[in-house]
Image (cartoon, rainbow, N blue to C red; front, side, top):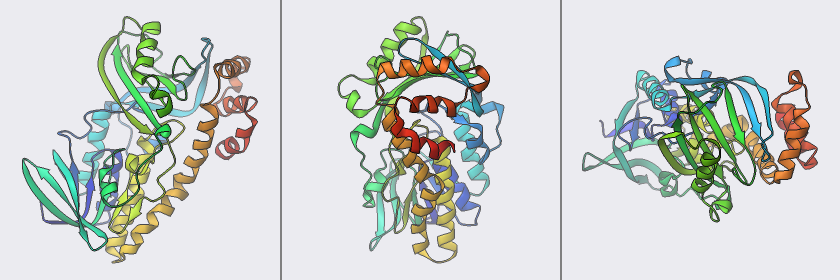
Length: 387
């Protein structure tokens, strides 16, 4: 470990690893500081992602794919199920292995990685961030850098220390809980979503197969709902109704920022990527692919600013992210606010209407069109996504 690096990345998740790799591939020195003992652990994720979202960054490998997903199952409050094909294949990942492989790809590009390194402060040169302070093996260290990339998750203390407003309306912070269970029977090629007041009001409940009679079963509800009844209570009631004999192997809980990107995700000497920047898809709550996209953009721009000797180039990151995905996420957010406020009766009616659609006419696009009958105000936003 040196006293200076061109770029220091705080956090070794998918966004952090991609930021580090893309910066290193342009020839700058990069260090990742990860607070946990292992890259990819603990897993705090539903682990579902599209093939397209992965292939941009790493070749799919069966060693980190638990299930191949080709179908989507919508389950209404009255028990009506509608199954439709997905427009493209998806995966349920083994995140421990997947995150390791992403970190290895960064290391192969020349990135240095330090685990159990707990960042507890920033260094400044005037108003610009110029390095980090961290604890490693019981000793305090400092490392200077031209650019700090905050990939430290939804909490993003690093962003706050830099003066970036990272707070979020509690109503947009989904309260999430998930069990990984075994001893259940689900189609390994289908992802199941349950909607309604008994499953996950102002959110949804998911069942993602992990193969071999196991699955991730979890849900997210808005902060407003979570104040009245916890996500854990909703999940326990669902398990009792549907899988009372399932063996619970692991349980996790946390917050997912289902909102638009932060108003500002860069400042002199620092950028935010992934959950730290609120680069999660606000409709689905998925953040793996979008985090890797944000990280790749941020890492490239960080390296460019250093090699060009133009620190102000770092501030172009905000616009490039918005042009790539940020504006699309704003549309998803408006769709979310419309759909998640549907009553149980509306969800039931949508499922009943769509159940009449022939199998060869079923698609996610057509499902949303059916939802438009119940909320015509969503028409423009849905059109922006599917047309």
